[in-house]
Structure formats: structure tokens, C-alpha cells
Image (tube, rainbow, N blue to C red; front, side, top):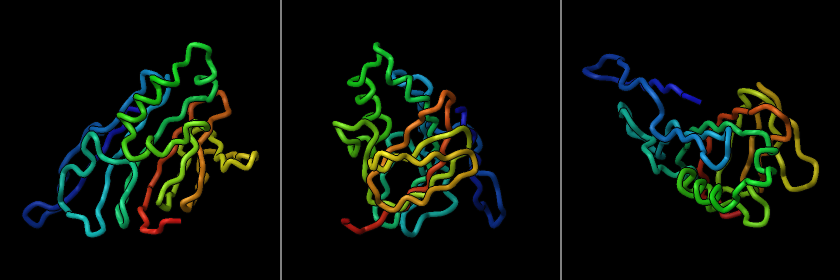
Length: 177
């Protein structure tokens, strides 16, 4: 991914660049070749401004009520996970470490399927990806397509042969169902 993040703010009443460089949370998965993830920024309900870092390593991927998370994920083709040598246990452990707050929500019997207490805006930046709602009929999405996901059970699948990149804005809700 090699994501560059530029953060602006104010110093002495002037607009300035506070930071410009790589995303501290970017992670290339060793156990899932081609998968990369990064939380680029988070906010609280009344966020501080003019801060240089709001997404340090270990930040939760699941926003609390009124919080937001901006993230980008590169999804490799599902065929990567279908290889005989694929180690689901190691991949799960790596996800628990690098997708905190989200990986715990993945269903044990249906890898990738999860439900969050958030409204998510998903924008497909590159490639094709399928949104699986567990109904047996995944929706194909291509670059430029947008999904508004409202606390539904879902998974992102790449049934194609090329990687897909998706940007997410997650907005935490305080609703239980």
C-alpha cells in the first residue's frame, strides 16, 4: 500500500502541515499475502484539532459511539486463503494483533463475516470486491462504487483474480441492535 498521509492544522493562527509521511498503523500481513491494512485517522465525538497523530499503532478499528475511524484495506483474491498451505490459525492471530476491535468480531465458523455497531461508508478505490451479507448472493462492487453499511452482518470477499482496495469511514453508534 505505501499509504502517504498528510495532516494539516494550525500553528500561531496559520494553516500548516503538521505531519507528512507513512501511516503508523499500516501493516502488510505476512500470513495473508497481498493483504494490507491501515487506520489513517480517528476522531472522538468532539475531536481535538491541530493534533499530529490520532491513529497510533494499536488504535481500535471499531469506533465507540460518536467516534469515527478512517481506514484502507487491500484485499487479496480469496484464492490466497484457499491454498493448501494457508494457515488460518496464524492468520487469525495476526488479525487479532493488527485489527484490534474488529478481528474479535469475526465469526469463527465463517471467516471475515462480522457485525459492527457502526454505520460504515465504503468506497471501492481499486479492483473489484464482493459484499457478502450471508444471503448467498454477494453484491459485486467495482472502483468508484460506494456502500453504506448500517450495522449489518457482512464480509468483504475478493472473488476475482486481482487485488482490491477499499477505503472505509466507520461511524460508531450507541444502538445495540
